[in-house]
Image (cartoon, rainbow, N blue to C red; front, top):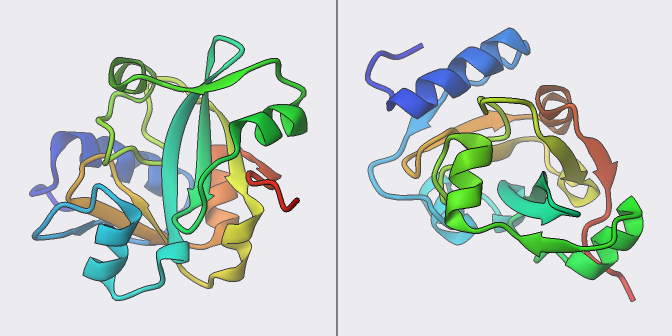
Length: 161
């Protein structure tokens, strides 16, 4: 674990290590707040970026790990989960639920574990890249590691209709 990591990324590194994720956090020279920025910085497909998006699902935080190539269909996902309503969380709600700012939300390292859905579209990539607690940090992992570290359930997050 590098002492030069931002504080929020240190917490993520500890959670990743505890979950047995071998990938090391990479500090990027420029922001990787969006999937396109992260993919460009890493030289990978935008779909291999595991976006961490926080929603309110029937009033409770819901972390959705989705492919950078997707936009979450909240009505479709609510149907998949048997929820009444899923809406995008505000920046304040994201910070409260994760302890991290939008653009740097990691799949782990939160104050308390969050209910998590993992986009099945991410399975197709050998290596996924997820934010690591700060807009300039990312971490590589496999789909299986992402499921393990989040305790998430697999689901399709976009309608194929």
